[in-house]
Image (spheres, helix red, strand yellow):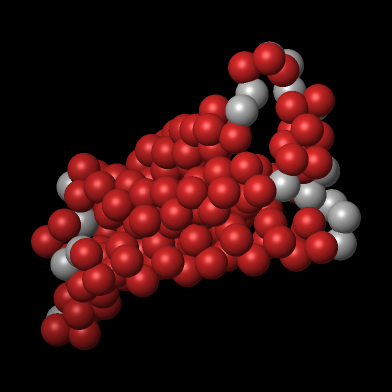
Length: 158
């Protein structure tokens, strides 16, 4: 479980970081609607981690707790370092921090630390909900494939 989570979690971190800096380089980092692509990165890599874990540990299929744990573990490895990078970036770039503050509803409470904590909280919330849904989808897919394989072998034996 650990190796899978670390591999996909690091890819998640790299994906978040590259996406942010590429968008910032092209002047799109103030477009908060583009965060939806962070969700695509997040959910895609979490899905791959859960699927690989399920394929390597077939006894875990239909035990949603292990799938959610795999998704959460992967996400923490991806989200936590990205949160730290964003905290440092917000501290070192006061102009960008001012832009974030000006676009926030609770402007007086937004600091680099609170903004980073929002990133972390959002990532963990996506992880919890997304890993549950993805685990159920993956388990259903594996169960269907097993059922078809079982039916196919029974037909061949008859």
